[in-house]
Amino acid sequence: MDMPIDMQHQQMGYDRTATMFSPEGHLLQVEYAEKTVRLGSSSIGMVCSDGVFILADKRNDDVLVVPESAQKVYEIDAHIISSVAGIISDARVLIDKAQLLAQQHRLTYDSAIEPELIIKEISNLKQQFTQYGGARPFGVSVMVAGLQDEKGRLFTSDITGNYYEYYSNAIGEKDSEIKDILREKYKKELTLKKGIDLAIEAMKKAKAEKFKIDKLEIAYLEDGKEEIKRLEGKKILEIK
Image 1 (cartoon, helix red, strand yellow):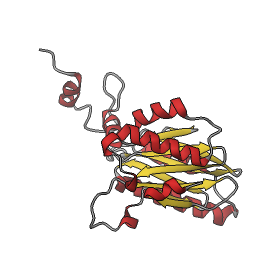
Image 2: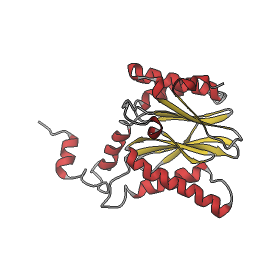
Image 3: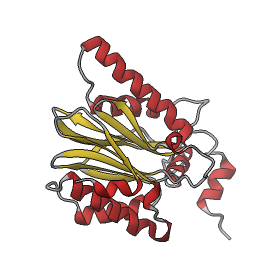
């Protein structure tokens, strides 16, 4: 009986380092890290006609944990927010770097940094850890949303260090199912209120019985306003 390809790769050592290509041209450690991302909690980002937001599932059921310490949407600067899926400890390193970069830009140029520069620097660092020996890839996908020229923009960086700009995107658990719903129902004309309703609907359909609105967290920015607004649980439904 022929041995499965994955087992052949393991026996031949192609998955022992992130820098060794398999005969099919794959970096197996990078592909394993991509599977880790899909085990992480879900986040949905969306650019709307009047702003941009990230809706995240905190997926924390431990009553002993202080809720405020389990945030899934991070503030990078007054006009930039971010969420992650995968290994949170890996993400913390990247978020810290992004926050420092935003501060340095304000001190050096006396202006707010563009969201694309943030995602580009994060992606460059992630790419390095797929190329050099002695280290493993960052096991995290990073979503960055913010204002540029007073309009919302949304970017996502994957395990490999690639990044793209999106109108709407999802990362983490059930991301494929969520994106299928977004592709069908997303429209550029959606307001923040209608966009948030769509994101909640997509999360609810994808997660089915696992869906709990009390575990959701949202941060959003209105066009032209450098002010991050946050809501959790059922209060999200009160956005007008």
